[in-house]
Length: 142
Ligand code: ZN
Image (cartoon, rainbow, N blue to C red):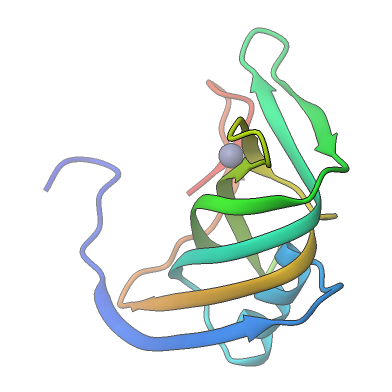
């Protein structure tokens, strides 16, 4: 198997809905913490009242934080749960659609205010995803 790949086993699958006003990232991380989910694949569909996301500037090695006050649909969302500082950490990228059909998005930040969100969390077992600093990228990777 190539370096940086591990074989995981499918674990539990959780499906649920977040409530209006919830913080999208906070609630997913909290659920995983309360249910002992240490590695997972996460997807979501729904809508937000406020979107918070970022773009990682590779040269500067830092995130440019962005936000949108428009009401958006979550038209794309892919993410994973790993462990960072001994707690479940959600790394997700999302695309947010607007009334014009245009889209914005990026690396998801805390501060996305849910209107509605249907969440699927697919646990992975038999693997440990622990984030540590990566010198090359400047990011915290597993
Ligand atoms: Zn990212």
